[in-house]
Length: 150
Image 1: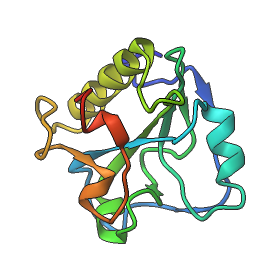
Image 2: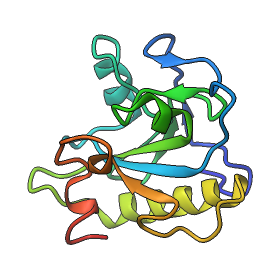
Image 3: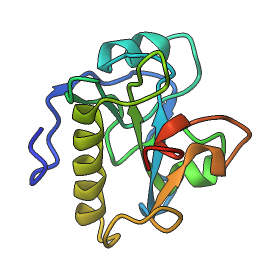
């Protein structure tokens, strides 16, 4: 991943389950998610072929970053269309016990910081420009990323 240019390791763009553009809104925060599996870009891509959901980026346990929806478009990640229009969302792989590897945490943190820099959001801060999925709907997502590992 080139964090300076915000260029992922892998690009595998979805052709459905996202909205083109951002309905005139600008990016205000980063939505944080976990996959509920030890997945990667291919896993997310396959899942979102039949599930009406999507996120912009996926971070694998080994730290690889993939892009599934362009930043200029709206991912269907938070269960709230207005919030989706105002966010860029990152999915993180997790192990069977719910934890996230150091490589995934490191890549996810660098990606979030790069997004914050690119969109002038300031230093990443929980509850300010970094929002957990569960802030928008009843879900356990982002699991331990919001618990013991935040």
